[in-house]
Length: 191
Image: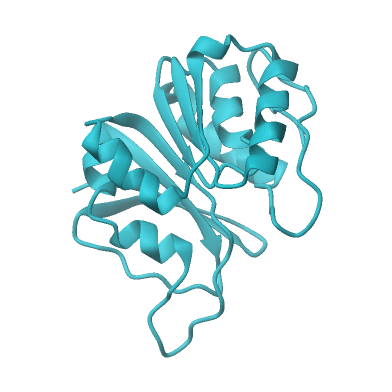
């Protein structure tokens, strides 16, 4: 896995071994950032379910002002810290929160934090034909604190598997959809 663009373009990122992490594929990551274009420059970024930190670190490489990355596993958090050092971004532009991503939404809302870009590519849920999804993606969509975390004109980018049929709340409006293999990336704005 590599940083695909910006100052650290081409640098290799460490990915935790095992099945605990399913990194966002490089082609998908590149498509996301190509779609966002200049919106990344000077953006305040939040990455939920950080894993390797690839999305927040990519944003920093491409000129984001600051990134907050949330990852529950302290083992994975060590990889994220190593990746930050390897790409040469100033540590003052990055915050790593080692906590549950869903619970972090409560904490961030209590801090009245707001972000221009929120990335989440959580572990995939099960196929849910004929029943409501219980996936992390659906939990994020249902969370009342997510829309207030979006700055005015902010974008929430959510990854999920195509076998996970999601229900969208009235508080979020889908503005774009990217498909790559089994991966779907949906772009939302607060409505």
